[in-house]
Image 1 (spheres, one colour):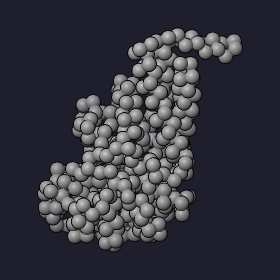
Image 2: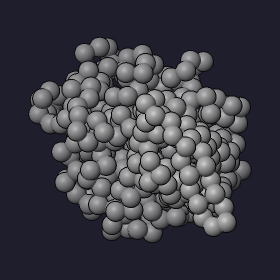
Image 3: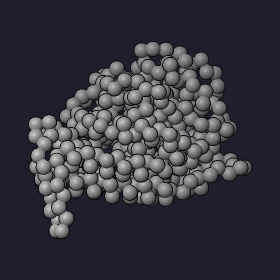
Image 4: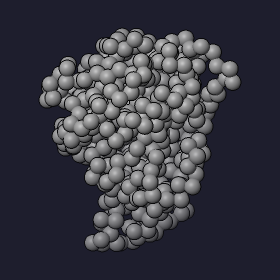
Length: 394
């Protein structure tokens, strides 16, 4: 029993140190300010939106893109309808603006031809795009008015190959949606810090930009198209191999894209299982080490209370001259408190950036669910299947 408690403590100490590293990295990212008199962009932008059964979301998404401060002559909007069974395509066709294009994925592949429809949709769109900078988002996202203007200015200044940008979930007042906001916000903080520190570990396809040249240079999704997920992170890792110093995180309130939460626990778990399914093909061993650390710590935090249900012995640990004696439940409670405090300390500056400080009140309340879902999603992401967009995916 002592060994189990000590393993938990060691994992917790490493995890807490890692969160301090991420907090420092997040705070070090320079904020990018848009000039009051932005210059003409040096590049044309192609916005790519894969869409499947999104008739309820696609209209406000397109409206936000048409409302950009960047002149329409400098960007195009390409929506790829991925075998939708609703009126998604008809909604897109109702827009008559010249810079909006609709592509039907069924004109290029059959309904069951591939495992990764989203990657294929993006690849088709890039092939047809007239722009040189590809910007990806999702059909359920809303872009702020200066989104493209800021991206164009950032690109003109730094000429990156790949730009990672912040995403926030827009919840209603129910448990699973508030949980997603907090969980996703923590992932965004880690994303920004890791990209800035040149670890390139995470990004989100709801808000990315990369050059068409870089996409072609790495042969697009070749080699990573065997799984449904990974159109974002796995592509970033491919580009980072050739251009390790050309991956940037754009930290600006002007580019925070809002995305919709899923509305049920079942849909949430399927989403996170889909995300976790990418882990087995990461080439960067640092990413695997971090994921393993997080997974093992959460497993231990489930094991300790499970043991205590059958036996709650006093566990004594001596480091001369200090002696620590506590029951298994007390070891578990102490570890849980330290984990929560470390995560809140990391999240505080991230929440300020997203203007979500008040939601941190809910974070301790949701800690147990976070531990449980991490273990379940991590396991099933490697060994299970899931449903996404009305498809069963391996």
